[in-house]
Image 1 (cartoon, rainbow, N blue to C red):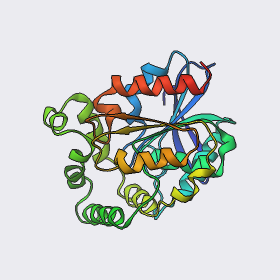
Image 2: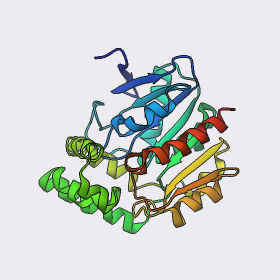
Image 3: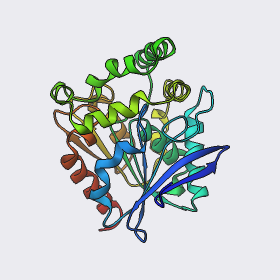
Length: 271
């Protein structure tokens, strides 16, 4: 294990953690999406490393973190996040979460706002509906029957534009390769958690400075109405939309995404 990597015990399981950036800087804690791991943020590190101490972790069931049999819950994910902060002696962080990582961030903001200095919610939603639960159930059935590979085929055009999929760049292949390695128990447990997402009515309780980054053509977490609704419910929040992008704009157009991310963090961190 490299000096940048750690394994910490939190909430009863072992979590993989990685540190990058300025060891004396404000702490940015980054949470990834379903079927991915901390590597999803690889293209964001250089854009933040000069000022910020970046802490990434693989959440329950994903990457190199333990994957106990589920189902999991979003309450559990939120408790895990706070337990990882405690294990690392991090009293407060600037939270950056994409997709499921943004859902976890909402939960931390609602229930543990004193642990946050700012909240950046990327390509995420606050409420599961029946069609979302059906979407989850469909993918779970495929995973149980055939593993992760066919689910990638069902998912890739939701995450990336058709042109990006066709080009099969190194960045695209990196996400694909990690997705198909995701532990089945972890994927099933995690998707069971997001199927029960219900933070919408509590978003008004978030008082942390909040920035929302959305993708204009995201079919998974559409900017309208999902991101705009989150924006309207969190007082004082700001919303930025990257036009023409799907779910993983941080991978497909990292320069555009990083400009918005860094600008927002600098503003909320007092610079």
